[in-house]
Length: 402
Length: 192
Image (tube, rainbow over all chains, first blue to last red; front, side, top):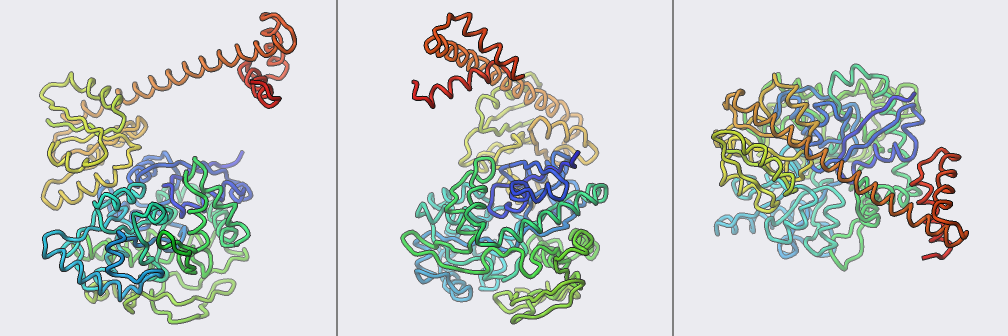
C-alpha cells in the first residue's frame, strides 16, 4: 500500500515538477503516490492546504511566509523543504507602452527600461492617470520583483504607479481592455498575451534578480513532522524529476503532458517556450534564447536557502509596512527547511551545499562553493542594481533600500 | 446585515439567495459578473461576503479587503480562529466567506451554516442531475447496441439484450460498458 500525498497547484508551467513526478513515475519509484488537485486562485490553494484537503501545495514563496505570520488568515506555520524553481516570470507591457520604453526585437536592459518608464510614469501621474500594473498576488515574488525594479528605477510603487492583483488567466484580457498597462506574471500567460497581440515582453524577472526564488513546495509544519519519511521520498522524487526536466530530450514530451486539460489546459507550443528558455517577445518576431529564464535543477536551484526566506521577509516588511520585527524574521527564516532537503538526499548522488544560508547577489562569476557532498559551481546571482543582501543584518539591508 | 453572494454560477447563487431569504433583517446582494466585481463589492459595502471556493476572483477580492483594511475596515477570513470546525465544513462544501471583524459570532454562524447547507444541497442536486443524465445516455447506448446486434446478427430485440447481458456477466463489467464497446467497434468498422 503506497502512501498517498495530495498536492494542490495552480495551472502554471512552474507546477511542472509535482505533475511530472506523478506522470513519469518518479514518485512511484520512491514509494509514494501523488494526487494533483487543481485550483484557480492562491486563496483556494492555501485554504485547502490549511484545512487538510491537500497535504502539500505548489505555492508562491512569500505566501508560505505570510501564512506562517498570519497575514490575511489565522496564523499557521508552514514548512518549505523544497524550492520548485527560480524565476520564470516576465514583465509584459501593452505594445504602445513597450514601444515607448524598450527597443524592439530584444529584452530590454532593466536600468534603461526603468529610466524610460520613469519619464512615462511621471507624466501619466501628473495627468492624473497613473500607470497601472497587475501582479498575481500581494504575497508573490512577482509583486516583490516588480516593486524592487520600479523602486530601484526611481518609481515609487503605490505613489507614482498603481499595482493591482489580477488572476493569471485574466491578465491578457486586462491588458487588452486597458485595465492595466503592464503585468508581471508567470508562464504561459506572458506568451498568451504576446500570442493575442495584447502585450510585448520587455523584461524577465531573472534580469531583476538572476537567482530569485519563485515557487515552493509548502506543507503545514505538523504534517511535515508527522510524515517526515514520505516528505523525504517526495523531495527525492522531485529532484529526480527536475534532473529529467532540464534534459532537452524530454522537452516535447513534458510540454505535451503539462498542456493536458487536467493540468494547464493550454497550448503545448507555448508551454515549451518557458521550458526551453526560448521566448517569443512580440508577435511576428523570432524567439530569443535567455538561458536563465526559468531556472531549474542546476546549482542546487531546488535547495531551500534560509537567506531566501529572510529576503522575502524583508520585502514583506518593505511593502506591507508595520516595521521590522525580529521575532517575525526568525519565524519567516524557519519556514525554509534545508535540514529536510539534506536528510532526504544525504548519500545520493545529488550535491548538497555546505551552508544553509548565503549572501544573496554577491557572486560575480562562476564560484565553486563548499559542499556537504558533491560539487557545486554557482554562477553570477546578482540583483540588477548591484545591491547585496547579507542575511546577517536584515534591518541594515531594509534601511539601505530606496 | 448586508450579505453579498459572489458566484459565477447564477443558479447556485439563486439557491443560496433563496436559503438566506428566510433570515430576518438581512439585505442580500448577488454578484455573478466577473468584471467590475471589486467595484460592485465596494458599492454594496457588505458585512459578509460569501464566495464559491473555486472562484478565480478570490485573490483579487482578498487584495481589495487587504487594501480596505488599511482604511480601517478590517475583514477577518471566516469567523475567528476558534471556529475550525465551521471553517472545515464550509471548505468541504465549497464556500468561503469574509466577515467584517467585530461582527458578533452569534449573528454570523446561522448565515454560514445556512450557506453551507445550501451549497451542499446544490452539489447533491448537480450530482443527481449528472447521474440521471448518465443513466439516460447509458439507456440510449444500450438501445443502439441492441439495434446493431439485431441488424448485423439477425437477432430479435430480447436476444440482443440477452447477448449483451451475458457478455457483461462473463466479463464482470456493466452492461452499459459492453454496449459502449459494441457501438465503438461498430463505428470503427465503418458503421454509422
